[in-house]
Image (cartoon, rainbow, N blue to C red; front, side, top):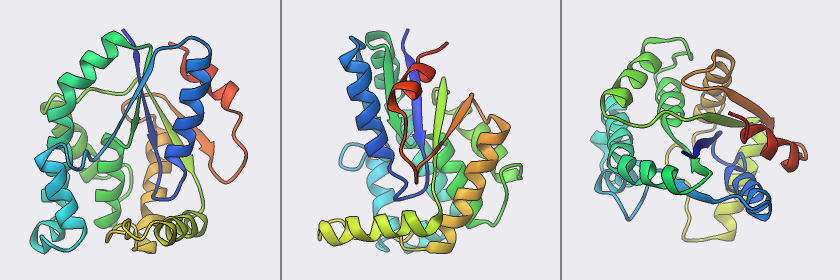
Length: 213
């Protein structure tokens, strides 16, 4: 059975770049690697409703933290069989955003911390829905200003990729980063490794670490 490795962090943290590097390193060493990203826009109807909310077309849904949280979780529930199959066929399955994103952003919207009631509710919700638990979670920790500048640069480079309401809310991003730090410190749902996303990352050492049982 393969290992489910989740890459987390606020918008603009560099999750895709890190996953690209780890995938290349592990594949070069003979590892069987595949990857997923959530929300699965264009694949799952719940994810598509999330996108409508994030871009202001379902304002009533976006205003409700539990409603958005449930849609995110249902997207993962629908993907669970595919994830489980991938784990039987690969050594490592990388996931860009997972349950911790739901916890961090929802808690940040409610101005709660990592040890608050909302985070506990998210854990119960996703367990009851049968969402797999990660084997390891990587947190790319970056200052909000750095992540924000990256997100703006990405938006400028791709006119079709406008920032959504979460990405454009600098205060929300900072609070989400604080919740993420609390989740990592508590070892929420799996072991965590915190990676300095503003510095050069030792891909080789990190690849070795996440391969450990």
